[in-house]
Image 1 (cartoon, rainbow, N blue to C red):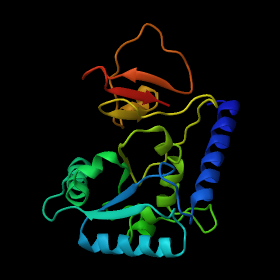
Image 2 (cartoon, helix red, strand yellow):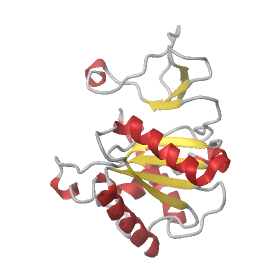
Image 3 (tube, helix red, strand yellow):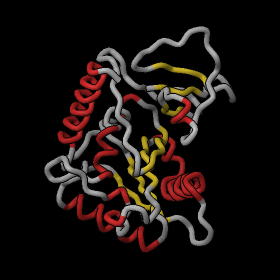
Length: 233
């Protein structure tokens, strides 16, 4: 990325953090923010710890108010991974809300794990890892919500699935917006060299005659019906 690209990315990130700071500790209007924020946990003990953390953050007005926050623990037994945890969380939401669930904009953050390779995050996981920004100081939970601050306004009811240990930075043109308005699954990805792709999940896209360098591009997956699209940032 050249100097101009880095400057644009920094400015876009500052703008997202600024928007989040405006709703932090305040009651959000319908459609302005997520209707439901879900955090997954590895087990009941971690679930209890997460719920205490979120309750304390709400009391201190470190999170947007007027939004429903849930923590769901994975069922006991063998590990079910993020895929199984997603299905389990959706089942729990369906049990709570029934058909009303189809009208909500939901962010589901996978945070079940004890971060054994990061001693400073082993007690509460990466989702509550403190970061050197914000006042009061941000944790990963706030940063995740800040980076996706523009999404709820431009999406139909549905679920955004993400993880607690990654940070997506992106910039788009002032005249553009990232919209989630198509049926099926929409995935976020970015072009990278093969050296990076060999150690990460990759998407196989439909071939095109010409792919231009741009801030954002909508592409179809190589497999699946045409309405399943991928957005490359």
